Image 1 (cartoon, rainbow, N blue to C red):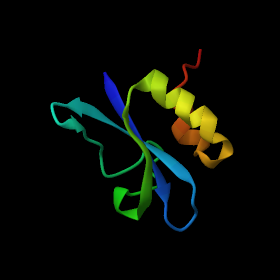
Image 2 (cartoon, rainbow, N blue to C red):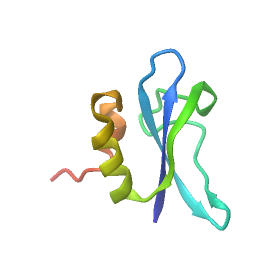
Image 3 (cartoon, helix red, strand yellow):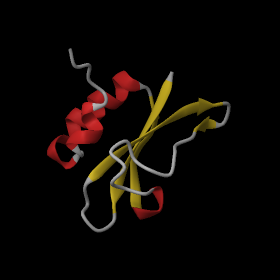
Image 4 (cartoon, rainbow, N blue to C red):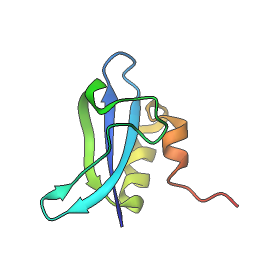
Length: 79
């Protein structure tokens, strides 16, 4: 199961998703967002951390248009 973290980018205030793994201590995430347009070091704050896919989908929907469309599309299946 994947773990998702939503971070706010310092300069644009846009939110980007990071997909990592659950660990015994919580979760981890890579240095680049799902869309690869944000580095972890460019983060101003975490909006949420360590949520599963369903929880992340709900929270991203609550945040609305501030969430990067490319990142959030990763949470939905396309046929």
